[in-house]
Image (cartoon, rainbow, N blue to C red):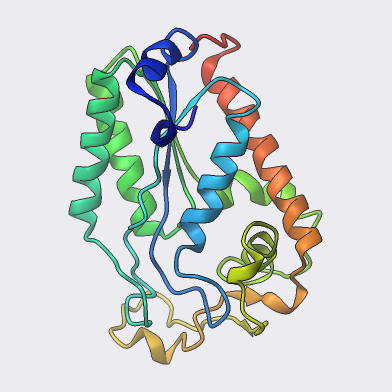
Length: 241
């Protein structure tokens, strides 16, 4: 059930089928010269919507903003503060709980460490104060990478490279530019730097030249299958949860 598309009556009836909600998190962030700024949000939301066709679950509208640390200096990246994200997550969990949801799956198309730590931190706090719930937190990379390894050829591919370019060629081909860049940033180890552009000018982490629509379709299907398995594990075999 896609929450943005259903009525209040549909929502009430949906609670008789499931108490599980997926909350997708994305970003508005540069993805090289060839992919749209909403790549993370589009990717994760489409996976969630497709998974909901195979098992009863609510899918919340995605959050199109996240904590972007390494790409803040790149054109088009719009970041929010970690404190802001934590407050938004806490409010969402609290109000979905008030509406009757008890299983919460927070999945992010944006896999920044600082961003993910916000989801984990708030999820842990909510779990401690609500003993009748279950919470899962993961990124799209956590979800798909174990299965993707048999499809992709690029080592250490994580941002606007083979995976994301392939998936976007499958999901939104009209939004993918002609460029197929390859780049791996060289940030100094342990040292925080202000001028991140000088270490990562192209905004790509991987090799987009190996991307194809066929790979994108396979990567997408593998991600959906993995998410369906995770949803069922979260429910513990009871489809009404």
